[in-house]
Image (tube, helix red, strand yellow):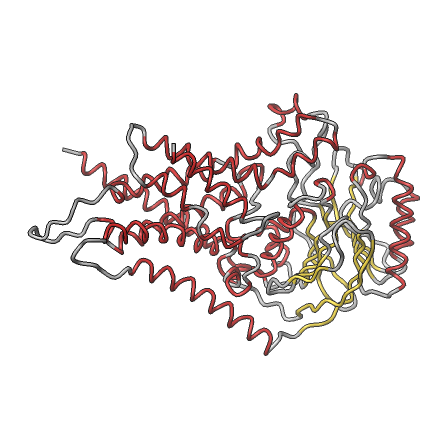
Length: 541
């Protein structure tokens, strides 16, 4: 019975590591109960199946607990079936920890079998558990396998849903997370899983060493602790150098609107006139402060700015009040192409007739498209009758004064490292996230989204401004420091100076992307292949 309770406990600890509880330090020990369940021998056959199911149980608890805010769509659409969305999503995402638990239990093999009592007269032979090299190898394999599976989850399942990678739990530890400019979030996940494995191994090893004559140094623990210290020391040095010798930058005056419009009102055509009046009022107030750039959040124009001539004229009038306006808009049948419905960012500069568009590339499952439509169409088809079309390419907007390139990121795109990196490689100086998290009410979704965005700034060493419908409207500098502009679920606007670097230095991550995660995947596959080959040699005559 206890292994199943341990699997549930790991899921609960993982949930507590992320918002709303947000106790990030628990990520250092959250996987220990699950590892105990798959490593400590139990009676019965089909050990591999037990490990697989134990990991799946942990995943179900974790993903259902962190993504329960998806059930907020049920009252919004008056559909009880949507209450099952968290469990439906978790049932697929849980395949990742399930496979990881299977691999972790399989690779250990006889490593954690009970040790025989020491015989002082027999020649000394170190059991496997007392060998630092083997212990370290198991911990590194477990960490690499976890990172590889997180990476696959980020781009494979539902076309990419990589929220709440384990490393994101450390978002508050600024010195430690600076390694993301080389490894992405995967490097932090690696350290955390390695710490979980070595902490448990150390406890089991100390217990096994009690009463034995020969005790050996725990090089496995020392090396793991050393990696954490090195990462922390590197980050501390980076932050100190950034303070002492800041990079050349220009100050951009940015005004962001947070209209706090409920999703019920957005979906009610009778409320659209009231929404236009609110946006006009806030926009005119912000324009009076003379910002360099004015931002409206995602889907802030009822019906889309290209819906009719009057709406387009209204937007041009607002844009004429400021040097540049970036606005989130849903537009249908742009350029007369039927079925080409996009969630877009539009960019208008004073004195220019041409409107630049960027179409969102990362669509939200069950919001902008229905995954597995042939299978789920009968259940959710009336809620998502048609799918949006994803954008075909990255794109940036060129601001005339000061001369900067702005990288639009719409909604959840700031949780995708590959999409953000593609924008930065086009020469972007500043990341701009336009989003509407109003679908999910006062839940942990707001902070989960915010915490993921922090890592995009560190990975590429680019600042970000987030303009949201109801929160969190904020700026993040190139080192992950957050400045919250407005309280969530309040109506208002805020103008702030944003320091934007002018020297476009590409980080290792910007140049090479998820090479660390790919290397982890290759390493894990090589270890698996070598172990399979070794077992076959032993079984052969």
